[in-house]
Image (cartoon, rainbow, N blue to C red):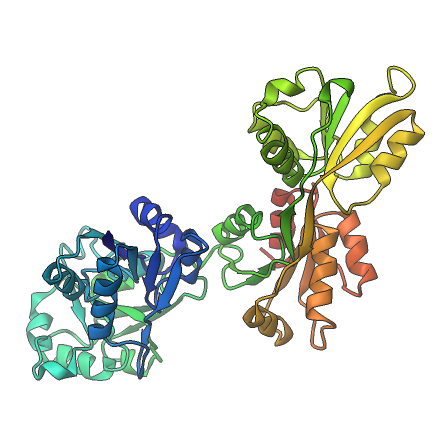
Length: 487
């Protein structure tokens, strides 16, 4: 049994440490804060218990004593417990109190430091907290103290005389008084101030002012407030990315969404996952592979299913395909084969079934056998076209796609017009999306499709297609999104 006190970082899930990801992957219980990015919860096993103990101004789901007791309870029960805390556990995170409670109860624990918003939020706002010639030191201080302790530990007038950079966390509500006291302590009214709200997140906002004007600048929580000469620097990079401030829906199956999500987030987008489909395995019997001349794959899902539930389950490996020629519908499918040590013999110029069919050579002999590994429900362009050309085609269903249950919060944002774009990577994602959402009564977000077949399905189902990927790949889809949204 162990309890890990893990710093989740400031909001960008990419800033979680490798050690944090490792322990999340083995957790039995995850006790998480409001400020920890919910995407990180997906790193825990599906059957792990997830307990929200979030705190917001005026709204406390669970007080600190109950949180401490909860950690001790699960820890003494022999569970692997991850306490996921925003920022760093020991920087205004009350992680020390939780460690004390665990130590008193004899529960082993480990601290996994996280990146504090005191440093990272200014950095994402283009503000270095120290800078040659401007500031050689930084002081991190809370702008809000526990009212129950009956005293104030922060002497703002004294801090004003310390100089350097002052970073204030949890200070939005009392900012007017803080600014006045810093001025009273000797800081010049024209001292630069910058407040970075929701730092490192897609909805980050940076407000710049001075000590004399910051109270009227509309600073809202949660903000990291930087006071000092460095706050006048504007080395902006995060808020200038091409898709910053754009909200994009990914309808791809959750098992496949990570690549598309990461590429869109790298361009600054806020990505909402609304999986329209779910990939399910299909039980199938592996045929005698030696009788076939070609093995054809039409998706990376097909490659994974064929190997995992076919070759791997039969105790075979890539050598069993040594006598076959391989065809892949596109680079994503080819990459899945190459990950298994196989190089496709045929990849078409355009990544659709029609182009794959056009690229097939004439059969060496009438009735040359072809094995087509694909989804249970799919278009018959390939088997029918290959049959007309003289091949004998066996279709092997290795997986199926089924509708996924939509996230009501994402559906509501789409219907409320709070989404900039919808992305579709297959006809099944379109069909299941429309079936789940129904008719959009308000303005339609931009619709970006991965290729002509998907576009045709979208048009048939009443969606206006605004852009199409070229080439018909995830990279092409990302580029089409950036161009359609003016990036």
